[in-house]
Length: 212
Image (tube, rainbow, N blue to C red):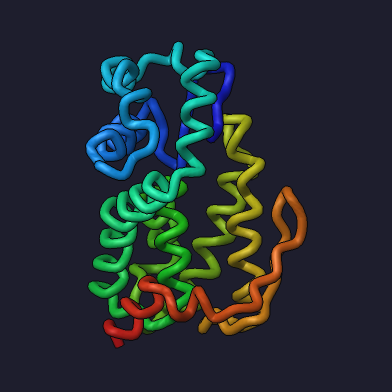
């Protein structure tokens, strides 16, 4: 759960201002397994109206944090991510004939974080359209552009997220296009080591395999 003084609020990457937090909570309330469905009911109208005062409502924030521990909420967050972002990323990657699991991960991360389309157009202006023939060079240029865009963004929150592009660039530098473990990258909370094959065996990578 993230809440900011300027009235922004998000759970699982779904923000109040986008209307997706309202969609998430509405789906949660409809689930028979939801532990806190009745407690969320009084807030549904404010969520639909994207009421920024919710970001300062301690009762609501406490409820949101409690719900984040509910397996039902966790499942709905995953399903919503897949429905809104994964399918779109996979469809575009397949249409371009991309083959590398890392490329799929780059597109997915950019779609859930935001800014894929305008930055992709910017990179295409100098590197040509993304395709299987220039996939690796194009993805490197894109991540470099994305990293610089995040570092210099006027929104004070976004420079803190440049580590995401840096982490993906580190995989390119290691020539780990197949996401073969173990590998590590740095985040604001410390060094993360991926030792399992979870990424390669995920739906994201399976979709890439299907596209080959």
